[in-house]
Amino acid sequence: MKPASRFAAAIVALSLIGPSLAWTSGPVLALTPPPQVPPGQPQPVAHPYDTPAAAHDAVAAAVRQARQSGRRLLIDFGANWCPDCRMLAGVMRLAPVQPWVAQNFVPVSVNVDHFNVNMDIARRYGVVVKAIPTVLIVTPDGKLLNADGTLTLGNARTMSSQAVVDQLAKWNARS
Picture 1 (cartoon, rainbow, N blue to C red):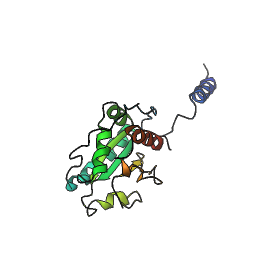
Picture 2: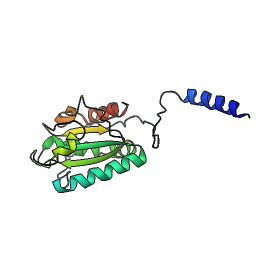
Picture 3: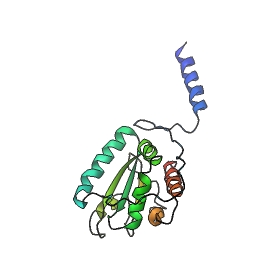
């Protein structure tokens, strides 16, 4: 096959793949549909957040991992005293949810204590943490995808687990 013919064949092949193909400098991951979560409330996690002092290193490691893998960052700002934060962590640990989150995101939790530490991490993305949990979905190159809804999961105690997962999927589908 001549080079021109190979090029034309490649263009045809790419057009068949469609708009789901993203041009990025890193790996391209296919979006997977969110899992179906059984009804009922998950168990809240007692201590989902590491010490506040660990946050900067954890976020830096997550950013590196996101760049290497092409997955988005899921940055969860909260505190161990927060009931909605603990419930959100419970949803993330559900058996059908864990593998889906791992396939689509690099999750990292940031302990903000009583809104007195680690606020600079959120400000990097143009967000001021006013309530918790505050969830950011960030591309590997640092673009915030859910600026319009960082507090949407703030009432995790009253949301179904499926609603939480569906919201994450909706944000993950953005580009």
